[in-house]
Figure (tube, rainbow, N blue to C red):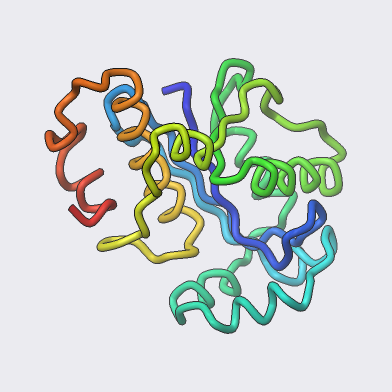
Length: 196
């Protein structure tokens, strides 16, 4: 699978935001199949060494679900290790299409993290970055809210959810005659994530 959906949770919205969690899942948009998963929760104290939080985001976190709040403060992994582990998610990132719900957010903050924590350039090629919001707009459909088996604002759950609906829209755009009511993967994977 040469597509990966990445989602992060942070303590800010600027490129230098502290990264709290990183979630990723390999997926095939042609079939909707989800593959290998990646999740790291970063130690908050360590995250703060590499980024600057903002007050508005901290206030926002206080309004989120208890499960989401607990997940972002439970991390024990140093940022350097989490980013090195993400690098190892593929042996060669040159051909990998990297998706984010807003690449200007997720990818930009991760790229800053790679530079700040590891003194490395991004692991992906900039021309391989893809945007969930763009495919949703082109399809004319709104992305569904996370439902069922996931926790909203858990980086891995959000990444799996985004991969599922991007796959649906991808298939619809590539083959408009395709029966969208037919599942594109086993019901336990995509339909559960979409709450269908």
